[in-house]
Image (tube, rainbow, N blue to C red; front, side):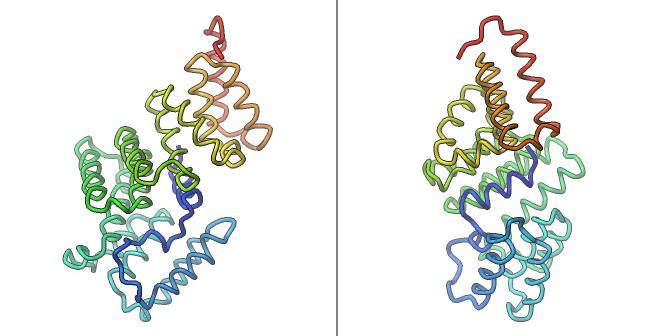
Amino acid sequence: MRRWQQLMVVLLFVGSTLHSQMPLALEANDSCEAQWEDLSKEYVHQSPSADYGAALRAWKGLESTCDNSPRYRARLALIYFYLDQPKASKEALATVSREEEEGEPLVTLVRILADAALLRESGASQGELEEIEERLRAYALKNPRDAVGVTLLGDVLNDLGRYEAAAQAYVAVIKAMGMSARSVGVMRNLTITYEQMARHEDAYRLAGEVISYDRAGLTSDLYFMCAVARAQASLGRVKGARDTLTLLANKNAEVREHPDFKAAVAFVKEKMRTTAVPVE
């Protein structure tokens, strides 16, 4: 699953904009809150395609207004992360001291996100991946109410192929939020992760639950529907898998040329060839 698709699903399906990813303990009277909310709404939440470049320019223009505070730096680093610039993200946090970071959990979150993204770019050793997982667990333990932050960490771990750790993050968030329209994005990501882990029954079961909250959106989702089709085919439900891919292609003809769709079709065809009696 591609990382940016995952992150946008979190932003849109959880109902979050950039400003809502701040720790709950932050002071409500911050002079930059209104500007941050306006920026988020204009360039992210209300835009058909999030314009993080414009958001970056707007936010950098508020440096003097926001006193270049740790919170300002953390938000700047977060925008760089969404622009897929993890080095710039880390540089934006270079002046934040450890003492300041203690009072600003978003700094810790973005540091982890940026480090994980850099590992993805350069390749990572087993030890480095385990360290990222440990930092995830520590952050989640210290900030249990930050559902969006933990979900983003799960997304990056998923992108690094650390499916077990990613699934643990998603499950923790779903337990905290409950299964509802607010947690559709997290359930969607967990469904795909289960299939990546070859937990076909879990993927199939969860897909049936999450789709009840947003059928229109999820049945047009390439990665979700391909994961569902693979789970169905792996469980012997080959006709259902074929129907799933047909529905996706009928709703969005462009996916027919996507390599993930072609791979899912080939997978289902192979299962049809080897399954003597389809079970539905």
